[in-house]
Image (cartoon, rainbow, N blue to C red):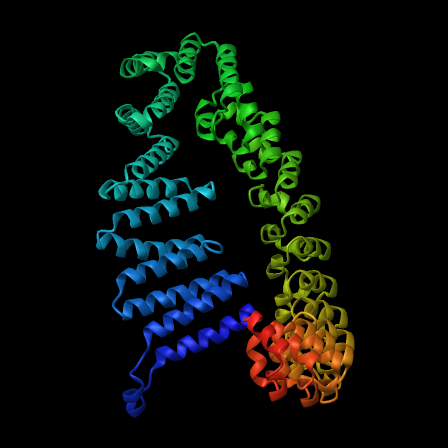
Length: 566
């Protein structure tokens, strides 16, 4: 009901924007933006309940348009932000587009904190996608710049500045990252509540010095941090950095690994530190890729060509196959392991494996959308297409046209999502089992099935049990007591579409008013005058007392039940 209600609300809101031309426009006063905004918001909320995020986002964009026309840039920016928050569930690009518009308005109005929060939201959105580190870096930097301009935003500035430093390091700009970590560390020392965090910033900077590979620079940095904060030398972070610097200087890999393991056992290293501590040492790399397969991209060329390292990495995260050495990318076991870990990894295996039936089946069974990466010829394989659609109905869009008429494939898709039914060939829509599966998920599809199937009692029964569609059933079905009972259990007001005989059936009417008190309106007059029936109706909705006969309006128990309901 949410989607249908939303569509009606959108039509209503659209009509508020049309106003009227000529003489009619003179009386109506043109577009009513405030009223349209309120209705679009209601529609957006209905779409959100139906999890139709794109449509909900479009409604908020319309709210922003109306706010702009009404001269409220503040509201315009707020609605654009709402649109972005909804759209990020379906499209990062669409969400960012709306956020950017809001950011422009906020920054132009001097609302730097709000602009910064949106930029931070975008950065975190890209960060969640894991591979968008260039975008993350850009948006964290822009967010930091906005927070620097805003009042009372020091903590947010530091948060974004530190994230920017992390991504700057990923891009190879170690001096810039070190500068920021050291700057934030010194700043933290000047604030009582933040002093504890300084050692973390100095450790990050020190790790980057280690990555730089100059033991002299590492020791100079260590002396600097101890001088700035005498407590650093005796802290876990300070001791770790000192031990790593010594092991690094002595080329003692075992000591390096041991000190890291000891520290990690007490205070686990985060992903960023792990990334930059990964060195040529095979044990470090194996431990890293066992925790995060993507860590293999930071290993040396020799270790990316190590079969055990590669298999461990793709077993942890199949998509890491894109980072293993070319010789191992051609390895069938590596490819199979990758797609078994994550079907989406089919995108990154070498082309020959996208036409390998076993590899492809493993991929689409765990990730139906992988069908779009399958070799065109193998995509026409019925077993492959069926496995993909069974895993994820959205893979149906990638099924070749010839197979969309395949009954088993269509049935597998419709059982998961009734909306697929609309795109099926007509002969498949005429299949009783397919139609039954469709209306069992969405009764409104009763209007799209063949006339013959619309007279199928079981199909109609399934449809009315989950949707308010008795109006679309045949006259014969509207007179079927079991079907009408199922319909009014779902939505009481469906009583209006039942046969006259059933409107005077006490059980049917009682069932209807228990579901929705307003169903009493459509009951036979004798049952409206029945005290038991009216009591059930007002218990559900006190407002229906107005349709009660005079003698029942004066009935104390009925009146009290109506008041209690309201």
